[in-house]
Image 1 (cartoon, rainbow, N blue to C red):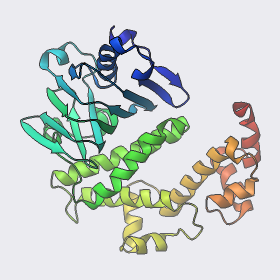
Image 2 (cartoon, rainbow, N blue to C red; image 1 turned 180 degrees about the vertical axis):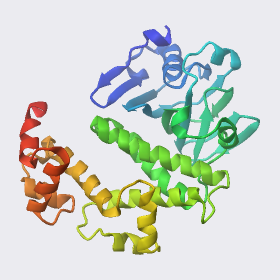
Image 3 (cartoon, one colour; image 1 turned 90 degrees about the horizontal axis):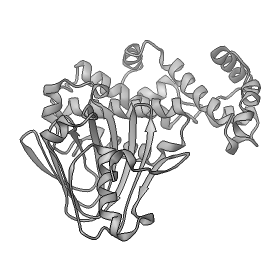
Image 4 (cartoon, one colour; image 1 turned 180 degrees about the horizontal axis):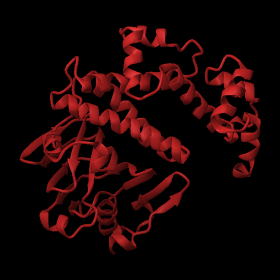
Length: 332
């Protein structure tokens, strides 16, 4: 059995590898190949009797969201395997949900507890050990997407990220939720959410590297990522205004506007844009088929249905009703 011949079960939410459907005598080989197919070729040590293991993987643009439930295992990626591999241009951001782990890379060794994040680079040798049954949630992403130099990436591998950090506390549930729901988003929405989470990972890495001074560009960027996440959580509130956002983050409205200049957009326009994206999604979802256009608009914070219709047409070139009707064939 080779990684290329290993065929997962597939559905609308992604790919599923599970030992449940594999005869007992083939489970060990199957599990080794499944893990190698997702995370790159490794020398894998697993127990002689693999009782249960599942991997669910869902694409989010160039990012893969992966959940693993597994019996104990050891994984070693050597220089020889890297040289023979065509998928070494990836970084894995992993959240340990349950169990314990040990990671070794770049001359460091760290013990990981549940709730901690860590990063490893598939382009260099790495050893992972899970001595007991575990669950992990990971983002597998192209190295360039993380936006770190080679030297900076080497400084953050094989160590817990976000421990005792406010940003880490924000990122951990976001990453967990993203992996859980990765297969449910329209393609563009999923890519945007993944990009925001990767931005948070990058900002957390910058914080780890000691660059998030209070007046530095990295500090401004970190604040902006937090505020964008806050906006997404409060889109349904019609009172979500620049004043309210500034008060919630203990900054001035002037500084808030300055932060959004980094995005070349105003705060109010950003809020409107995110609301429109959510409304456009809901207008073609079966779950919202019984809602009127006005109800969808109110759900996402638009106080006036007529105003919503005007800005929707300005943004997408059609009315909300026309967009809903044009999407009806996709729901059939």
